[in-house]
Image 1 (cartoon, rainbow, N blue to C red):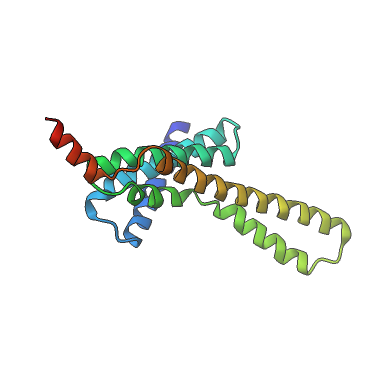
Image 2 (cartoon, rainbow, N blue to C red; image 1 turned 30 degrees about the vertical axis):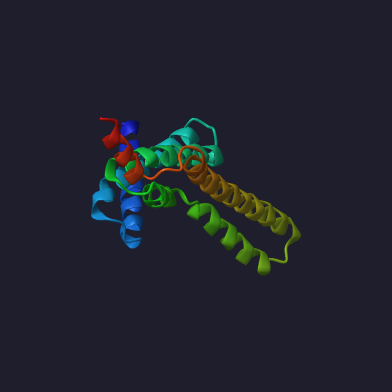
Length: 165
């Protein structure tokens, strides 16, 4: 029954990706690939976290796969790959770690007890560093395939395929 939880999480990652795609006013024809990319990237992230590899590596590999697959989606739907990669990557932003960090900062301002202060400070720095490295891995993972794989757009690739036949 554990696989059902992953199906549900993948569904919600995809819904989050579609929400950001609608917010960014992408063309309607790109919504389904954005949903699929968001679900795949999110499932890779939570799968690696479940296997014990940590959220930073999971975020990096999920964003990298999104970046690579966004080229295929761009070719398929004749749109720039960034239209697919950015909305699909945003649901992997580490909101809970950022929230915990900010709550820790707020607790630090009103806590005079040195024993509690050092524990709260340790937790706050830990959550802040996790959030920072997850955001960096998300940015690098999504951008690196876009920079390395190809400089041509989906429209240019379609034109190249027409001339080959």
